Image 1: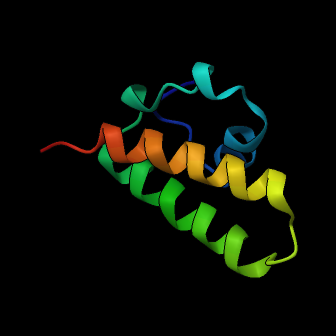
Image 2: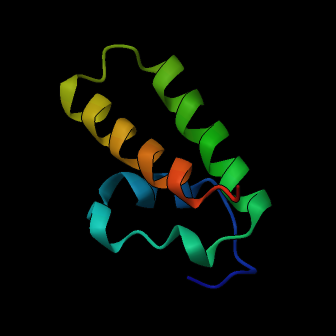
Length: 70
């Protein structure tokens, strides 16, 4: 992913890319924050998205938590 390219499409790609292929270490802190915001918006706006989305959301959230600097 080009580090200079950032749209909400990244959040959509994060939802369909296999979790082990998501490279949060290639994203800037601003991009990571934007991804968190977008995923939270998707979750809030689609509460009936189902258990698959909830599982995926939690998997990505764990990746993002692990990527945060101490």
